Length: 306
Image (tube, rainbow, N blue to C red; front, side, top):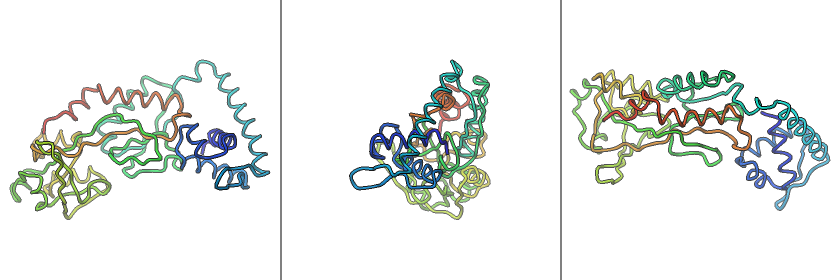
């Protein structure tokens, strides 16, 4: 963990007398403040705070650590001033995690353009569909497609993600074409481990919500596996439009249920703190927001007709 940030957290707790107040002052989740405090106590090898129901107070080790943290922050501030104008320019390594499908359709292109614009930056792009602990795995930015954001995380919406129900012509020839969302209950639906595994949700043309219980003989934690299986005729898949659109255009998949819009989700950039955001991370978030809104290839994928 970043010891400078941990020092800032500890000083803020000591000055304000509570972790909640420190979290609010630093624009950081309470869970993150608690984690930084635990790491600081581990580094110090001693308990730093007396905890009571009303207020926190420093132990003897806490008094000593507070003085050291203040000196550390003074030194860090002096180094930042010495850095001059370059201190605010994007530079350094960003560790970013996202799903494989989003990386293939968007991030590989967007990150390449970002690196050309900011040549003093570098990116370590890690593929992971499951939510990861940003602090423990030293992740600067997680891109997630979701409607269920965790309350202790800071998120910035970058784009919308539309989905499409689709199946291969061979499957439809054998099993028939569903005409209503409710018909999916009788089909072999390929389900995604982390989203909508047993319930797919839609809005019909009248604006009414429709929820359909689905099941099938194949589920996976990577949506590209389900997409490939759908092409091979394994069943009906609910896929991000950006992944399925090229295969629909090629005739390898058919878009289904034109009268029903699958639940729309957001593409979010998730990070740990606004207060201590690096210039590189701030630049990346601003860049991605603009890229998702303007890139012609991405817009062509995400605005393809069902």
